[in-house]
Length: 198
Image (cartoon, rainbow, N blue to C red):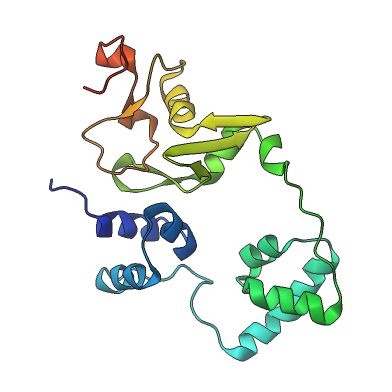
């Protein structure tokens, strides 16, 4: 099997249902590259993401307004109706419906397993692609009042024990953002005490 290219990574994320914004942030590529891969590999848009007519968009406005009045946030409305954030903001302004106060600690109140499952997207060949928060190279699980390493969480879930030393992706796994537990090793498995990758 040849080396996995950037196009392969984009295709895997598209097939897993990741949004363009997620792919742009995760792989540092532009819209045009993502569109090209989608067209070349004949990957259809997921249901509900295809372009809609003006009439279809206007028909969603009453549902969006009902959700706003019920206290839904803009991202929640976007995820449910696929109505653009700009259109939602414009509706709020026109109808003078204030945005709800954002609960910045909501992520931290989830359990580690819930937060992990929310952002770990299954892909082909047993890969599990991380689409969640990150800080630098670290893939972050924000849960249970703290920040956890997604690779460590996945390792623990797969092997049933805490990792010893550093956790590294196996050389046989070509996807940098894969967090599948079976695709990682710790120092004990590598037979090292220094934590170096072998």
